[in-house]
Image (tube, rainbow, N blue to C red; front, side, top):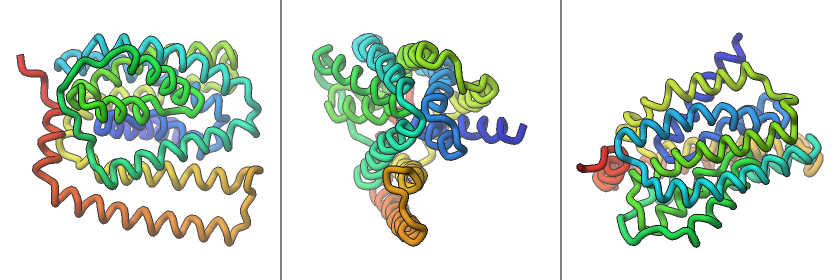
Length: 304
């Protein structure tokens, strides 16, 4: 029962982060599942099964507030589903010994991206511009879907910044469209894992616990995105992901580092993490008005 409560809190926290940044539900949840010894393929399968429910609730919420561009959802979601199915079957075919460090390496790369992106740049600043075309969204969806399923997360970290960086879709609709299209990715990835694993290693209780936490958090995320500085939250979450996956890699057969080496690396990470958090807080205070404008644009309903 204690583990189920902890998993529900993981789902709650991960969904709150995802609602604030438009990313990191899968990365955060999978990282923590791996940290408690879950099989890599089973961890990703568990997260994606839970995401079927959380992304459905999140998508409906975004649709209700006019935060969804359905053309973007279809253009990126369908290719994303194909990539996710391929990524799930690929991960299912690997042995646990090979998959654990490989997934940690992918998660580490995603964690570094989230950490650096939000520490030094804050919330991406997109502006409404020209239409987004399938020739851009389709390849992006395939790559993001494959990384999401094979790495246990990545749909948001890959898709959200890419669309925001294009300057062609306002932040509010970028986050809403990515969250809504993730439903298709979660369904496809779950089917891929069921084909590859046959349900082996997937605990239904864990799925329901993550799902319950995520559903509770979905409506709260709209409040959170208004009040918690994304720059600070991104630096904090990125640090957790980096530390956890570096720990896994240093203990893996790939590296098998000695205790002095591991503790030295951990100490360096803690120091850099603390400095990044301090810098993020300082930069947020300096750019508070601009960040509030971006947050408001991402959270407020579309003007009718």
